Length: 95
Image (cartoon, rainbow, N blue to C red; front, side, top):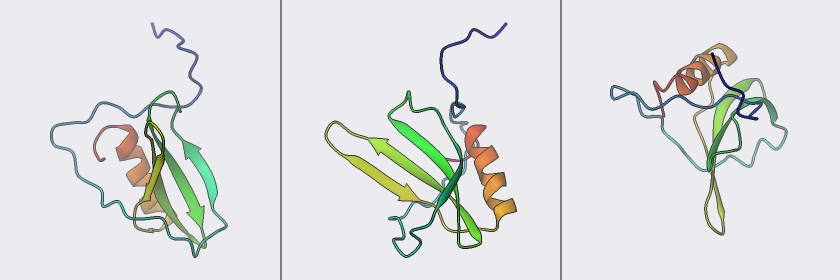
């Protein structure tokens, strides 16, 4: 039986030992119109968002530090590929 924790969004699973590393880069400012279609719970310092912009999709990672916020993004992929990466991220298979 799962106990309700008050969180409404999913959490990423613990990282698997055989996980694949994603390449994280600085956000592209050229695509200002970004639609966030899925996100992880913000109860942790690191959150993730699945984003669509300009016919492509990517994952955005935001890390809340003591006095600053760091944001990075993956490469742009097709929607299908990005959704696959998103599922792997939630499953602890990539990070």
